[in-house]
Image 1 (cartoon, rainbow, N blue to C red):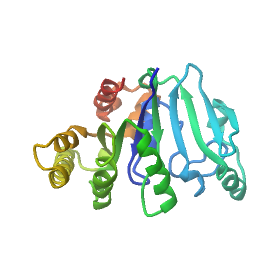
Image 2 (cartoon, rainbow, N blue to C red):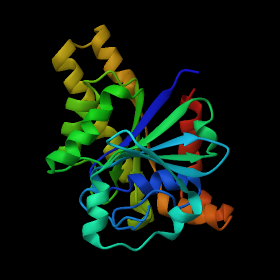
Image 3 (tube, rainbow, N blue to C red):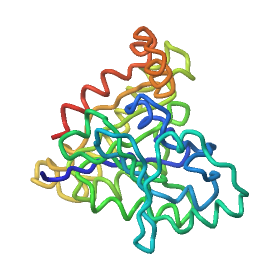
Length: 261
């Protein structure tokens, strides 16, 4: 079966891991401040890649830079093992990536979801994220509702995502529960317009309007979804259908499963 890779990208601390946890329906991936995998969230930990792949059983596979593999029991992952920060950081520097084996429906047909460290002014973190782009078929770009489509995000989208061979880009605006309800649709329209106008202008400048290259760039752009991944995760953990609907997560989840093989 051919593998289909989709990466979750965006600036650091935008809620990428929380979005994936909401898809899993369980708090699995470490967030920016969490302690997981028996490691503290050290600088080295923040440069790691995490991959989600389908498996009937739940377990964590740690891939080390020297070629070693280690299987970690899922319950041990959830407990966390207290270590000295120096110890955990030293161990983290030896890890290449972490693979989460999990019975997630959208990954059943050879799909791998990659959680990237993100992009910011840290060259090491940027390099890890950029190294993933040539390997992926699609991307989910995560934007924060309180900081809607910054100039840095615009640069990343145009110069790294649109300029690559990635076939499709979905956009998720997280944290809509942190802005006034009456402002949500206005913010989403603003972000959608900025993305579409920016991509069209860049495609027009590079390829010329109406050209095959121009049309290819335009087709890459998917819909912008506003949601609260934090609320969706909480709703799934508590089997709260009302809260899940309020999070606006089901619409995004349905579209994701539609575009995946």
